[in-house]
Structures are given as C-alpha cells and as structure tokens.
Image (cartoon, rainbow, N blue to C red; front, side, top):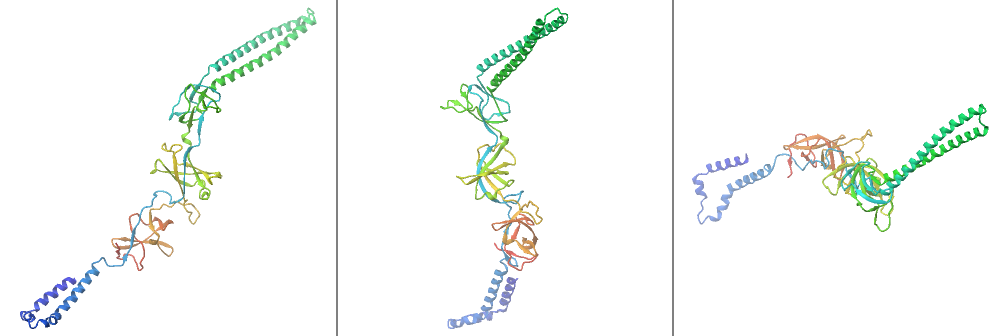
Length: 428
C-alpha cells in the first residue's frame, strides 16, 4: 500500500511541473553554484518518503505479525510400547546352561562304539556309546549257571523232603501198631528235620546266586552309556578303541568322558556386578540383554536372583538372569551385555503403574499453572494451549505420557504474554 501511495505522489508531482518550471531549473554556467539549494526544496520530501517506504517493507515484510518464539519438535522416545524405564546399570556376562554334563562311564573299559556327533539332539535314555562287554558277558554266563545249579539243588531238596515226610507218616502209623521200633521212628523224624534245614539253605543259595547274577547284569548294563537327560551334544570327547575311566588317570591316554550334553531349555545369563552397585539390583527386575554376536537384537529378560556370595578377589557378585523367551540364536558361552532397567514409579495410591512415554520434550517446554501442566503447540502460525501428563524426567528431557504426539511443534521457551489462538512468528 505504501508503495502505491508513493507512486501516486510521484505522478502528481510530475503533472504539476510545467515546462516553465523545468526551464527555471536550468542553470547557465554562471548560476551553477546556486543550483543545489533550488533542487533540495523538492528532493528532500521524496527522500524521506523513500526511507519510510524501505523501513515499512523491512518491518512488515520480515514475517507474520506477532511475537517471535523459539520452538522444538517433539520426538519419539528411544523405547516404544513398553514401560517407561531407564538404564541404571550395565554389566557384561555370558549365556550359560544350568543343566550341562560331560557324560562318562561308571567303570573303566574300552570304547567299542560312539553313536553321537556334535549338534545331535538326544533324549533321556538314548545310547551314547558302548564299551567292550566280552568279559562281563562271560561272568554273566557263569553267574547264570550258578543260579541254575542252586535252583536245581533246591528242587531236589524239596523232593527228598516230601519223601521223608511220607516215610515219617508211615512209620508213625506202624509204631502205633507196634510194628516198628522207636529208633526207626526217630530216624524218620530226624531225616525230615534235616531236609527242612537243607531246604532253607538251598533257598538262601538260590537268592545269593540270583543277586550275584543281577549284579553282573548291572555291570553289563553299565557298559552301555546312556544320556542322563534330553539335550544337545556340544562336544564329542572320545573315539572307538580308546579307554575310558570315571576317574582321571595319569598320562592322558585314558578318557574321562564320552561327550558333553547341554539342556538348551536351561539357558540363562550370568553376569558379575561390582559389589558397589549391587544395591541397584533385585529379584524380578526387568533387564535388556544384547548378544555380542547380534548387537542390533535386544532380548527382553529379568533377574532370577542374586547369588548370596561375593568374589573377594574381584569384588563382584554374581547375578542370574532368565530369558523371557528362549531363542536358538542365544548359544551357551556367548558374550552378552545386560542393561538393568529402572522400575516404573508408583502413583499416589501406592499402586504400580506402567507409564508409556509417547514423546520427549525439553523440560523448559513444559509449563505449569494451577497444578496442571501444559505446552504451547504451534499450528499454522497460531498457538494452542494443550494439557499434558508427564512421566520420567531425566537429563533435562521429560517423557510425555499424553497430550503431545511425535513431530508436533512446541514452543521451547515461554517469552511471556502468550495466549490461545495468538499469531506468532517462529524463529528460524
């Protein structure tokens, strides 16, 4: 508008100037010294109008009307969809299996066959290896023969005892008829008693022989090495033809194990925490684990318990952590880093709540009035006052639980005098 006014003023001035006025402005060589004084009478107003025009363009054309405010864009929190928790402690450790065993034999023997390889899955009771059983089988045959002989002797004694009892009964009847002497009757009675004693002895011998046979059969069974539990074979430690023993022998020529089995369902994490920070850890605490082999994979987990002892040399305490869900990528003895998370805060009623932060803002962007917190949102150059609820405040950043979405523009500092629907200019 000011520019149009200025053009109209110039046009009117041009129309007012006639040829005589223009001729009067001409100066001859004798009047050149007085020319500036006559020109300044009309040039000065034009210069003032031009300066005013430039100032107006600079002031009104620099942006929209209203105060200048600084803004910040609400950003999404680093962890979405879970508890509003922060790391209070970091520790390193390893994936371990609680159920892990190097399977050996109960007796010393020569390995005849190994039936497993690394990576094989086995079930409890499966045969892992077979030792030489030729000597034990011979002993078993001898024990079985002794048992058979004892049973045969027992059967013979039973037959003789039955015969002796019939003879005693017959002699007793004849004695009543006075057909046999007392000596004959006493001899028959003695024979029955002797055979009864012999029968008891034969029964004992049969029991001993049977127990001996059972023992040899157990020795034979011990030569078959079986899996003590279900799991995965992670190492094979012996080959056919080698000797194995349940105890370590000098020289290293005798193996002490067939293979090592790991129950993959018993995997967990063990970390050592400096005893100066163990007060930050408790049973059931939420943690996040990251395997060194998969740095971009975050594993949800929690503390099982704190082992109630400390390492005097290292000044550390062992902490056991369980996976929320087992994954085949987490292998025993893998290195792992664990983040211990801060628990969600309790509300005024003392009940535990799960506070989900949907956005993060600097603390200076959050204002309070009458106990209610709010922020100024900039929409199309106009202000909107919006109530919010906040969560955890840390390092100058406030977790916004509701009221602000990521990507919205928020006034970072209140310059004062702001109001609803006020037009503002954003400082670039």
